[in-house]
Image (cartoon, rainbow, N blue to C red):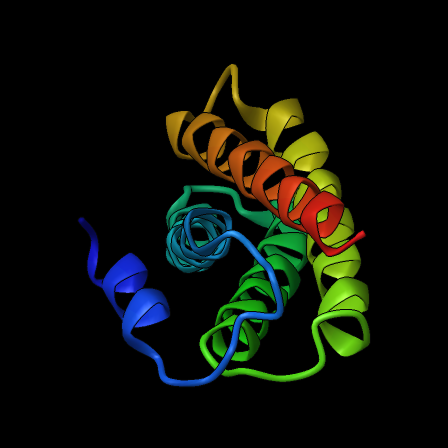
Amino acid sequence: MTNALRMVRTHPADLGGLDPEAIAACLEECVSCAQTCTACADACLSEPDPAPMVRCIKLDQDCAAVCAATAQVLSRRGDPAGIVSELLALCEKACRACAEECEKHAGHHEHCAVCAEACRSCADACRQLRQHLG
């Protein structure tokens, strides 16, 4: 059992009928994606010619910020039907945009391939948790 799942399960506040595994899975994907996007942006900047990758770097940074914020909100109890649903939708959108851009560079830059995969996985986790919200 992961620490995220342990914390979700042991938190004294009610989950409002949400599946603890779905919350923990999404939270973990968001944290992983934030780290991966941050590292990808740094790797892009370290390439010999980062100029063609400016859009990728910006999307990496935006996605990392949105994923980190989503993980923070998911770590707390709040109104599951309100801000959480909208934040999950935004996170999914940011992840999909970042994945699409990273895939353009994946053939030449392995770090972009890794990032695209992490973004797709996070987008799927956000979508699945939103479905649980109703």
